[in-house]
Image 1: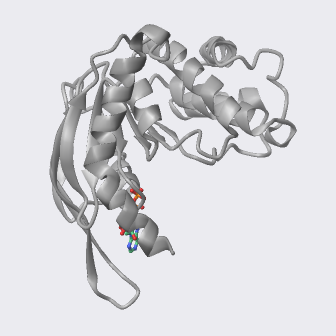
Image 2: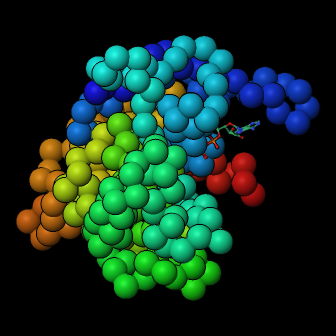
Length: 259
Ligand code: ADP
């Protein structure tokens, strides 16, 4: 399966009714088993693009195609947002199997898969806990387990760890790489954090703002696991610097607008 984003543009109307071009002529693809990261400063259209790819928002021009799906099958998507929308009245287990229930999977398969993914994200023993009993990091783990459990054709993640403290975030990033290695789901991941992008991506798509356009696509030629090891530091920093040079002007402009 391959996702093709073909000439996508999106305009919004601002508060005064003027047209704002959030995205202009976006073209890229996500290959089978590929981890693609969208990076760019605030307001460059990352979330808009992720939502269009996920079918949650329509484009003004162009479209998104899923090539190589069996028959006319609709793609299965797994989505993880910054603030995981777990159902507060459902336990961890019941949240994780939610998508499987929707798919009409048998009870025994729900149980098997639900437990498998709960174990995989390190929530063994918390199956019967409710979201309010969990820390922020544990809630994100449950959300990740729920997204992976349906074995989606495409996994979409929008700044999934940005609400977490720095240490939890580092741990979660390491764990995500481990989990991803086991599943190799085709993934589109959004972040404004350059280090995070270089740590995770097979390819980084760098967006500029006003309008949101692709500035460059950078292939990260580092092993998938252990990118934070000493031996990769120089190359890692080189990639970060390369991306920073591409977005620094826009990042400064974004800060001015927020002031
Ligand atoms: P990012 O995720 O990179 O911060 P967004 O996709 O949220 O960027 O936004 C891209 C641009 O589109 C911004 O200029 C933003 O103000 C504008 N925008 C986003 N959503 C809306 C909306 N619902 N109505 C009007 N403008 C919007």
